[in-house]
Image (cartoon, rainbow, N blue to C red; front, side, top):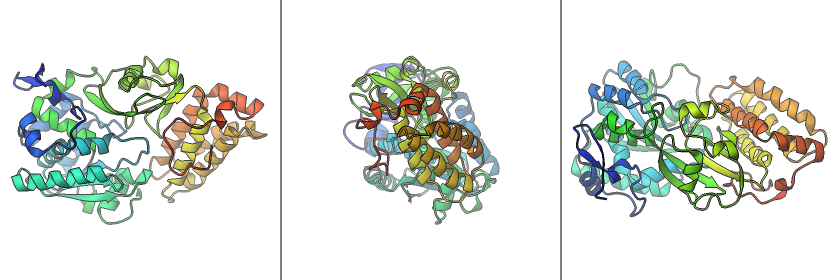
Length: 435
């Protein structure tokens, strides 16, 4: 594109296509030559970039939303020139496709971010931790690495480690164990990876999208990044939009965009919608009338039932569906994804899942299950070795609030009509055989 947009670091005008993580989404993986022609060579990393990251306000796009500059600084403070940088592209969230899409289309942008981090943090090893099933992303990444080796653009060799397609495999401590050659299961913390990660060395574990944003901030500056989004949530974000929408897919929007506007980027809703799941399987159900005008801004989301953008999931539930059934499917999946190391997770999530299915089925006596769900979620929260049970509990409690009228109907009259309809939501792994 030839149109010009906001000014960058030195006041130069920045082409609009340079501002987009995904470009126009066509043409497959961008070659190194095209990448350099569009963006030029990246600046060398160093302590200067920590200050620029701080000014940018960039937060992690993997789910927790932790300030990126603070995370990088913690690793640098512990590094003696032996740090490790890991790009977390495991993407174990079943309804998310943003990270694999980004690598498939813009692998060099992600690798630029990884190299920038390595130079800034005095690291000597770089790893891309990539979900095992993502063949297109793996092909694009391997081809990009070959191009970069031939061109001699990287000071550090990058290796790819396959991540099992499991929900907990992307948790930081599970990732560290897998990169070290062990099972992808969480381990007790502290120490956190920034203190003692891969091989006992300080380790930066950073989401794919965050790395790509960092590479653009280095080129165009914090002011450019803050020219998009809001004061409290600057920049853009990749969203995976699915469910009852005309064209499900991955889109990039400035933060502060409303949920309704994000859905309109995918052609709008395909049928009337009753609720939106925001943030994925660890996320929050929000009524459609509230979600429609809700800005994708950290402060605004927090004010609505403690919601967050999480890993960038926006899933629209049709009015004819049943939110309790969808939640029961997800809760059953999360119970099955336990690492099997902690009683509250192994037994607690299984019991919560079973109670949810009884409620979704409208079984006699399920009124008692509502009370049990409130009790058990309180007992499980905060007691796992990782945050897996906490995320599952957050999801379940948001459903009980959002679908309160359905809960009452299922208790009083049995399962609703929507419980027996085919789902328009994305499939939940392992949920075949349940409505």
